[in-house]
Image 1 (cartoon, rainbow, N blue to C red):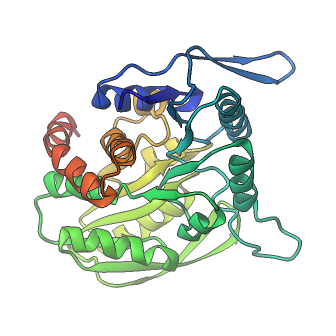
Image 2 (image 1 turned 135 degrees about the vertical axis):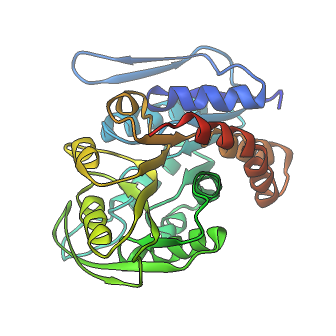
Length: 332
């Protein structure tokens, strides 16, 4: 790992620092300047010649600033003769624009993939892509790491009840819900809904039984929480005793926090693919699980040419103690 440098960019500083701590090294020196006219300058503060460079940067809000910062950082490393450049994007912005849902629409996630490659990225590492086929938009290696195993371990430790049911908030999330259900040895249910316009969902029906059970809604992301809160209400109306909500990416835009506070929710569980420092203080029923062990294991596996699946399984096992501590810290 002596030829490996991990740089923390603006949106993921805390996460990158955690990754570096696990890897036993200091984050690379980098300066990011945002000028008055909106331009961004990224300057690397140490030599990267012949090194394997990793930039950790989620492209969440402000999406365009964070994306442009990452592209500029990649260009800086390329022009400084880095051996390989790896873009670690825990939350991949524009992932929901992965197809033409209507005529004359762009496929923006494909455009972002092209921009990253053209800037000079040799590899891209993401977490829980909204659409797994986005991996195919890249002509360089693209690893998509799941956070489900960490979330599942937390829920196993947190909820001792065997009357669990994993709920998918829509038909598109059934595969995700089934994977978590297998980990928890629980059945699944599906909320049948329709979406009249973006960020507005109307829950219609429930496929499955939650009466008298502990329901766990699992999704890849929670944005304005409109879909989630309507789903929580439906599950309560159908007789669920307790409702947990879990996701990989807590975007939590606009009224999301207020909606979650008002919802009849036992606990909201997400990861730190998007930094939650400020929102965690506003919403006490939110538990944030760190994905740093998964990213550190991924970087180590790439650098040592080790099997990635084995490294990730080991990382989850090693995280069990910290997950237990997280469960005991959380007081309702």
